[in-house]
Length: 216
Image (tube, rainbow, N blue to C red; front, side, top):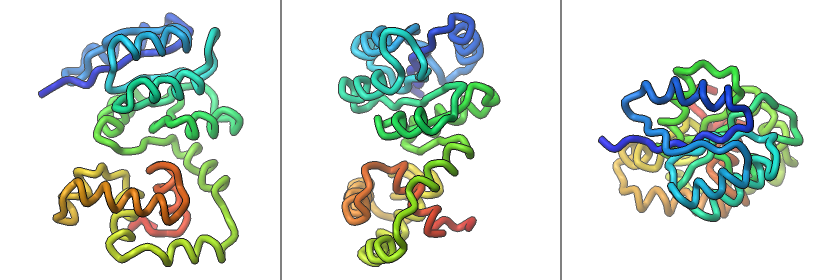
């Protein structure tokens, strides 16, 4: 089984060393590099094309938001998990809009961090509960507009949207609905287009807001 390649980006050496020490003990993780600022991170991404980047936000030279944006422009297969001490709105929203698939705080339990890396690698979204609440609140729109948009979805697209809200990857959705991954990708594209959303994170938030997730 191929290991998940991870790049650690943080301007504090102690933090980088702590993450490396823990992650190197895991059989499915391969640390391919470290960077102490955004500029170094972008260069390391260009060199190593990692599966996952653990990205700090507040750094010298280039912050984590700009580095996330450039990372995804360089390597579309790379996923970014923000790992920061900050949950302020002026940092959360730009990071998500830049394309980060995960947003965790540095006090995350090591086992939860490992799970998040595995989940994001599989195409799932991983957000700290406080971050999810902020995003749901921000996405509130007039009810008449959202109801109309939701009504444009087909029954199958509603099923796919519900599974996205559960954090399922395209492969997992395909298995659950007995359809191909290609068909799932088509449904996801249709959902994003009809709801005027930019990515799966926003789709998951939309689904939770409209109580499309089974646990709600």
